[in-house]
Image (tube, rainbow, N blue to C red):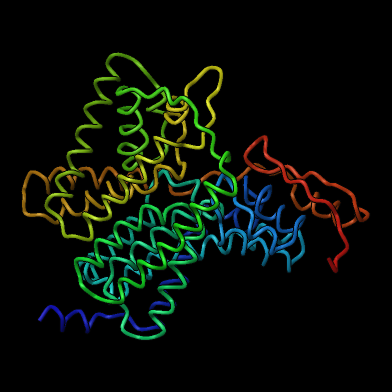
Length: 422
């Protein structure tokens, strides 16, 4: 009966297209300046577009950044070269928004019924769309690697595709995602486990695609640029860990970006440890009691968080250690997977049969709705007059080096003007 109901609720192609369009429009409401006043952000301009313009698309594609290859941002920057410079940030932002919309459609595929009913998967997708404290991910192609990894994970745990087109898409996407950041390293053991458990030949093909991506990323990190990720003293401590978990993961999931973790004090330390223990307990209960797919997502999120804390790309300052700086870094992509895992765990607890868990999760989900409403729209990037710099660059003679400021403060992109035919 459940399978028959699932077939009846399976979405058609036009419905997926409509949902995809609506989701993209929803992302725009969170950061309308990404479309109507597009500007580069950090590596978007300095690294990806700058390299594509100065060195050429193919040369740039083979250049690792901080030790890893980033296929999607590199390809996006190459595509942006086909447009006037004034439109290049818009092209990259549109690609980033498309990538952000993909997890929703994947969750609503019939293949993803392993997660539950269409209604339950719609709730999972809604939480993903509204997740607070995700400002660094919205319409920024540099950080699209996180969202590509989420889509890749959803494809890996979904039922195997039956059509040739579906299988081609899976392999293409897994390779594209794996060559766009280090997340394939965390995804490989999950894919291996599922291939061993499910005894389906096709899953070994997925394992091969992910393993090939891991080899390429390892080559970039260990051979091509072994010194690209310097190791700093972290200044780690249980107190700072509690502050990060409480403020940047658990409270941020409920109330959005906040400065709670950056504060210190005896009573606050008690609060931090209490929130950290409580939030971790909720995730642990969900991990023990939930279905395999949710267990694997919590495992993936835990691995990502551990790697982010062990080897963050955050140079220490003279006044603060690496972990102290992380307590002040709200909204960064390091917190995406753990906050989503916590939010999805709350939804699972709300649907469980334990009355105490159901009541506690209901209260926390209501609090999360308040946080979503409060922080729905992210602040617009500072206006650095990109259009004016683009006009200056267009009028500059061949061979002129032009420096264009970017967000965040202190970043800039340097372009050397060459002939249009080059």
